[in-house]
Image (cartoon, rainbow, N blue to C red):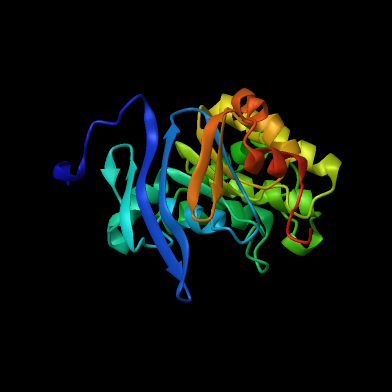
Amino acid sequence: MSSSHVQLSQGNLIEVRDLRQTLSGQEILRGVNLDIPKGQTMVLLGRSGGGKSVFLRHLIGLMRPLSGSIRIEGEEIAQLEERELEPVRRKIGMLFQDGALFDSMTVFENVAFPLRERGERNEKIIRDKVARSLELVSLMGQEKKMPVNLSGGMRKRASLARAIISEPSCILYDEPTAGLDPIVSDTINRLIRRLQSQLNVTSVVVTHDMISTNHIADRVSLLREGKIHFVGSLKELHASTDPVITDFIEGRSHEID
């Protein structure tokens, strides 16, 4: 195992090099290079269907790259077997786009699921950790509800409670505000910022929502045509005169001109 470790540069939690992937014969990722600094929120922007969610799934080992390198805390994970990925996944929580809650389980059982899956049998520990996670996302008192009885925002928060229950060092968010109204979206954005500071986690947020980006980002990257087109601070993003970036920020299309 030690041979797969290298010294991380400049305090990066994740380093991706020349990541390539095809889906149904189409090149989706064409050599993605990206450093994700420890303790910061990196927002990954890009058009719908441009490969952002595909990129995210590689970071947790749900997809294996055709080629390239993914290092998490210095450990190469790109070609790890399912069994070897388990310790890596403990470090990473993921909020899926649709929440991915189990409809047949209560909120409590959904949030407790990762603990039980990893062999925790002490019911007091489970209860305490579930209570702490639900408190962090402001869902106390909702333990007995079924997912079908939750609003869209509450579903996201329950999913987030499940993602943080294992005390990850990194949280991945796939379109966290998709399908939510502006008020609920603002709640989720504030929650992302609060969790980052309270838990001292690194966050990677995939979105095409500029309002969210302006609210939560420490660093911003733009995925375009399978490669990282831009990476920098929010200030650098908004100061850019690159037409690709200004069009994205302003939501301008040239496809029907």
